[in-house]
Image 1: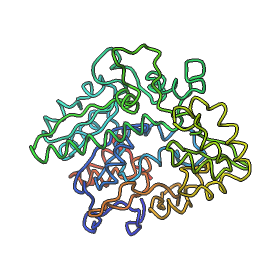
Image 2: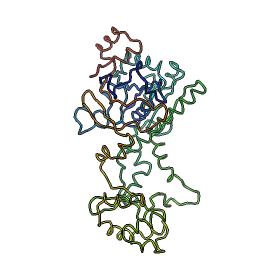
Image 3: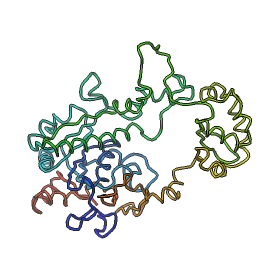
Length: 412
């Protein structure tokens, strides 16, 4: 366990003074992979105490391929600021431990298929009998009703199902569909989890009532496409739905590296033409609207790209300044030391008992009052099992029996 005096150590209730908006809220994270766990990490960023419940095999994300030794980079990225308890829920005694944790929890989050919680006795109906005030959030692939409710849902599966892969494809059709890298549906679902839980907590503050929350990857994938998910009665199936503006907007090669340019407004278009030495294009009536520039893309883009060969991407970024919205294409490694990222405090250093010191994302939301605790490293499997059980009234003898019977697993 990390040093209690470290800036990134788990907060000690007695010395805790960095109060966040959700300070005093206890969250049980029974999720795996990305969406549910990261949704709980977002709640931890707001000051909630998050207890991650893992099976003896651990969260599956721990086993994903990673170039980082000893731990999955993905697991570290979506599980910061949590305490880990390793429980065998297939064992009745392990299930009894979880039910005891539910008694005093404010929130429980999971991503089991709908048939699993009732079988274990930890569905919402079972949980609210133990704790009527609990906020119970279930994430599924497709929702908790309907013909797909028991199907396993994954980010890329939902991208393919909901049209994201088609729109991402180079041909903008079915010939070359592509997946958007980065598990975007999972992360949007995670944001929905945090948003939904906070709203339910606010409702409980007003009424005293707990409730269930249902979030799905399907709903998240369609929500991300609200500008496309519009179909007027008068329109055909083939109507264009994409929001890409066309024309010059996009990534272009330069003397060295690539640059993204967005010059949709008349002001930005004129500045782009002037700064690239093509002022006559700004005056050409064939190109004086965004729609016209999209129609003449094949004529405009080659001219712009020839002009861009005069400088590198970083040089153009400086030359365009505030006059043309743009950015040199960078690797994520460049973000760790980017002056804007550093100025806004988005990088922090974590201390992990196995990985050691590493840099990662600091709390992304900044509050003027109640800023929340400093984040701490993602836990090793079962790292806090004994500590959490002791805090929930288990005696040392009871904990030792559970450890010996492998109902509870001791971590690093």
